[in-house]
Image (cartoon, rainbow, N blue to C red; front, side, top):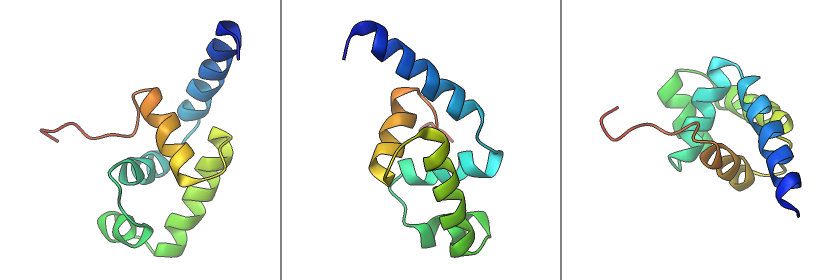
Length: 86
């Protein structure tokens, strides 16, 4: 991958992150913390099936195929992680 391709891919991911809903961002944050869907659901006060639906939608928006790729994409762009004080 060339430097230009990396920049374009990064810009596409940035646009995708910006297209996430607030709840999808919270699910992504939980994912980055290493939480299971069940734990994310408990923290957000929603059903585990709803977390799975949000996870599917955000992976589609980020153009990734699994949870690990979603977490890496978000971390590379500085999104979806809580601060130590938060």
